[in-house]
Length: 434
Image (cartoon, rainbow, N blue to C red; front, side, top):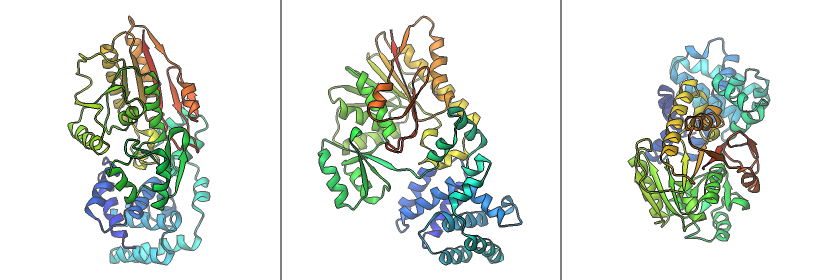
C-alpha cells in the first residue's frame, strides 16, 4: 500500500480547501509524483469523496465519538480505511488495517485500529448498507439542495441519483485525419484496453483512462468527449450552413467534433481565457487541424462584425450532469452557485441574441439538469426580446436517432441516463431568430 501517503496528502489538501477543483488537484499532484500508481490513487480519492457522507455514517456507527470531533488526519485515515475495506478489492483487509494504523499518531492508533477491525469483522455489503440509509443526502453524499434539484428534475429521483453515483466511463473519438475508424479497435486490442464500440457515434467507450490512452491523446490519435457532449456537436452540425461561432469553446472538443462532421464550415472558437485558448491551440496543432480560428474575448462585451449563421453557447454551469466524473460537486451544490450561474447564462444568451441577425440559429446547451440553468434561462431571456420573433426547433428526433433517451421541455430537451450510451446529463435548446 505505497499509495496511502499520496491518498492522504491529496485529501488533506482538498479537505482544507473545499473550493478546489478535485480533478485539477489530482492531475497536478500526480504530474509531480510520478512514483504514485495514478490509477489506484485516483480511484481511491474519487471513491472516498463520492461516498464521503456514507463513510462518515458507517464510522459513527462504530464509534462513540462524533466524526466532527476528530482531527483532520484521523478523519482522512478512517475515511480511507473504511473505503478500502468496503468498496475496494485492491488490498487484503489485514494490510489495509495495518497500514492505516501505522500511519496514525501514537495516541490515535488503538482508536483507529478498533474501528477498522470492527468494520472488517462485520464486512457489510456496501450497496445493501447504502440502500438501508434513509436520508438520501447521506446515502448519496450530497447537499440537501442537490437532492432537492434531482427530485425536481425527476419525481422518481432514485434512478438519477444511482446513475450519477456510478464510477464514470470514458468516451474516445478517433482523429480521422490520422487514423481510420476501423483501425481503432486494433489499436485498443494491441494495447490490451477493454472497450465497447458505440457505432452510432463512431465512438469507443473505455472504463479506465490510463497512461496508454493519454499517450495516444498527446499524439493526436484520440480525444476525450462524452457521448452527451457529442450530441451538442451533432445538433450544431445539423443546423449549421456557412460560418459558426463557438462562444464558450474551451477545451475545444465540440468545435473539433463539429469540424470533423463538416470540414467545409468556417468555425470561430472563442473563449474568455487566453490560457485555455493557448491550450486549445496546442491541442489542435497535435490534431493537425487548421480550419478553426481561435479568438479570446468576453462574449458579454464582444461586438460581432462578422455575420454568423449559427451561435453555439455551451454555457458555464454547475456541471451537475457530469457528477460521475466530478463527485466533489455533490457537496458543493448550493442555491447561491446556481443563482450566480443563472445570472451569467442569461447575460450570455441575451448578448448573443442582441448581436445575432435575422435568420440565424442559436444552440444553447449546459451539462446540467437544473431548470434554473436550462429551461428557465431560455424562457426568461426570450421574454426580454418582445420585438423579436423566435421559433424553438424540435431536436428530439435527432437525439433519438442516435439512441439517446430524452425528456421534452418547453424550449428544449433533457438527456436522461442511458446505460447504452453512458451519457452525461445535458440540456439542449435550438432557437431560430425569425
